[in-house]
Length: 156
Ligand SMILES: [Zn+2]
Image 1: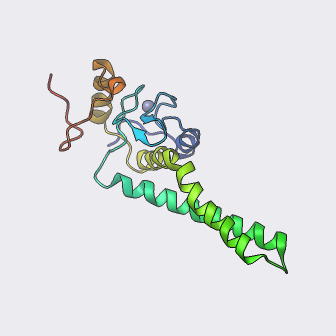
Image 2: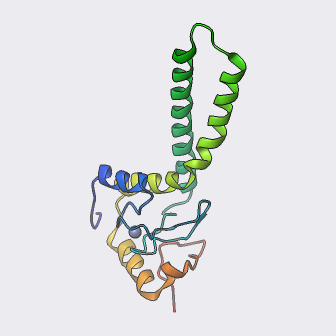
Image 3: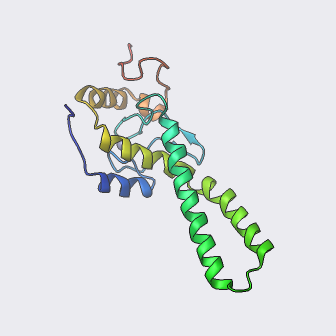
């Protein structure tokens, strides 16, 4: 049984603003555009809650990029039809396909974490572990978790 549960729409809204989906803090696990700490620096919740988490972020990135491509194709088509300039049209779509995945990269982590937290709310032990990491300063320092048993408490 989950310790607490939050509304998915609320968590997704936070994630889309690059905030922690769980605690709404801007001091989250995102560090720079391409780097991440193991935990949110405010609430201590870890983003890597299970093996294969990154597959979800890649899925979010792909879906959003394909949505952007579809939108760009529609706008380009209706704005230029019937004389569609094929080369500029294809080149602009190529730019969209290259730029959008980079622009949304950190958001995919927060968005997928929001989804993961909604589908699989944290247990009391996970929240206690997160609080302990924040209290010990590990979350703010970005001290990585051990590769195996990520939910275990660190022995000090
Ligand atoms: Zn947080």
